[in-house]
Amino acid sequence: MILIFGGTTEGKRALAVCEEAAKPFYYSTKGYLQMVETAHGIRITGAMDQDKITSFCEEKNIRLIIDAAHPFAENLHHNIAFASEVLNIPVVRLERNYPVHDKKSLWFDTYQEAIDYLVDQKINNLLALTGVNTIAKLRPYWKEHNCWFRILDREESRAIAKQEGFPYKKLLFYKDEENEKALFECLNPQAIITKESGESGGFDAKVKAAQQLNIPVLVVKRPILSSQFISVYGENGLRKSIENLVPDFFDLKTGYTTGTCATSATKAAFTTLLTGEVQSYINITLPNGEMVKLPIHKTTKENERVTCSVIKVSGDDPDITNGHEIVSTVTLNLDHKGIRFLQGEGVGKVTLPGLGLPIGDPAINRTPRMMMKRELYKVMRHYQNKLPLGFKTGIDVTISVPDGNKLALKTFNPKLGIVDGISIIGTSGIVKPFSSDAFIASIRREMQVAKALHCEHIVINSGAKSERFVKQLYPNLSTQAFIHYGNFIGETIKIASELGIKKLTMGIMLGKAVKLAEGSLDTHSKKVVMNKDFLKTIAQEANCNASTINAIDGITMARQLWDIIPQRERRYFSLILKKCHAVCSPLFTKGELEILLIDEKGNIIQ
Image 1 (cartoon, rainbow, N blue to C red):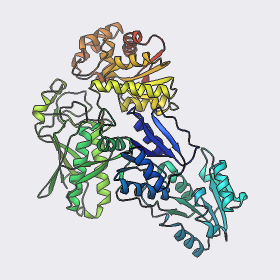
Image 2: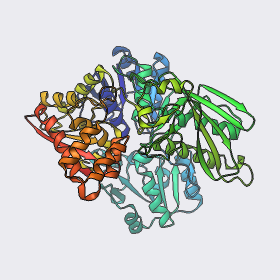
Image 3: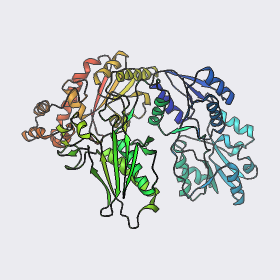
Image 4: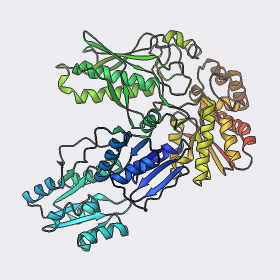
């Protein structure tokens, strides 16, 4: 069993990750106020000291603790660490994203240090944004000076303030969508004190507003956690940790894309090139902003170049690159400016248009290129003093995949005009096991969870890219209402129908839409490929001119249709959508079916 300590935004994220397994787990909060909906989590409430945590873990056979509590819940972190050490239970800490310590703010290790500074600087009018539980910690200050405290507008918070003897007339109650700058202008404090609460604690908004008004900001640093805790920074990192530590909790394991592996190898190689220190692990940021850590398999230093490799792990997805090395060689080049990607052994070269890459370039897709550039610039900024004098940011990155030539023969790369190797791909950075019968079972479980949480409107998407666009259309739907179908469109619609879902929205990109329109309810490339004759038939139905119809023969990927179909002939895409409806509607007869065709820029056709 898994035990989550929540009560925060991170707690809800941890809960959502564990719900995906459709297996029981425990979710603990100190109070009763947090609204939590869960289909499989067993809710427990009330503060737990180290003895209670230890006995609970023994009694319930807890195999993993997830600490997703507030970063300043020091006693709880200490109690978790105690139980972990006594029972030898691993702890995963789901961390927040914290900004870099800016030099404009004043940073303190303890509240007493902050109080000493306030007194020494003769600051007599303070606004405290540190929360009701810090009234006691700041008592030596507010007993002798004017101090405002902003707290949550609830009875529990009022009771704590009253118990501590803080004057009621000096309390401010937090409001949703509060204008921080307007509040600061109204009170005009000499200084503001806050906690290093991270993004989900609204830290940046507070500091930005104060700095705009030239109000000094005192920040109390977050407490240091046990070194035994395994820190992760998002849902994907948490899921990977659970998969590693409790292998039987999820039926299917996730993996990382070739783009993520190439990015990790590239960052490790550049870091080693500048510092001389070989990296065992490297942190990178995924396209969604989440930070993940990958192990570095091998490092070789030769003259002025460093080569690192990462072993591709695809989880339970039958990917041909699973277990193979993804290699990056990085060198500095003073003869050009910017980052240049070069084709190494086993990486393909682009020979036809339509892939969004220049002909002749290595087959490294746009998202992996963006990821690598972002990490290289991060390293460059961090180790600026180690760059050669007069360096003009010239960096050569050569990506290689040993045996990539042979692997490519098992893909559609030759038909797409990619020769000599595989492509470095990935839009989300994460590989979800779409190509498996077990994935269909996981779709059913996710749909059952959504149904149990009273989600009457479900949104299904092929992956993260289309989901990101559709979420903008339905921002108020819960996280559980969004489900990935991968390639299994037909099976997903059938499951939704069986469970009696009232409204089903499907987001689909053009590549899958043209296959679906022809009648393929499983759009995996191993089972069905784009049919140009079918596409030309639709063009004739849409009364496209002869030049448009002939242009279809020259495309290699369906998304090129967005470029060759002129605006006056856009009825073409409406016909594709209509045919998709005709294929899917018989599977969903008792509810409302909505299909959204999404272009490369996120525009939606209904």
